[in-house]
Length: 140
Image (cartoon, rainbow, N blue to C red; front, side, top):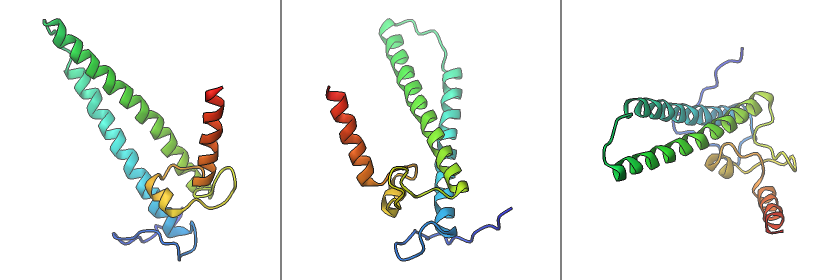
């Protein structure tokens, strides 16, 4: 079992420290776990609301509006379910020592990008190339 890494409350990864060593990895691990916790809590609240919210609404327009709201909420939760899988994948990469490196080039992903999108698997340049190729194939 690894010793817990001390991380000050105001810690932010910096370019001038060794890339993806204990402190940075712990920072991103905590960030990912917090994000996952928030998503799971929102999901739990949605389930409770959907279970409690089942009622017979006599007005057709009101019923249609409520069904639309529920469908939108369920689509949002499905996107969040997929996001949780990506968070779990990022946490696995942290454990395996692969986190923070582009899966295409093997180069480090910028700290700014990881801070903004901690589930990123590609550097900005690799992601842009991927999206350009995707757009070209989509337009065919």
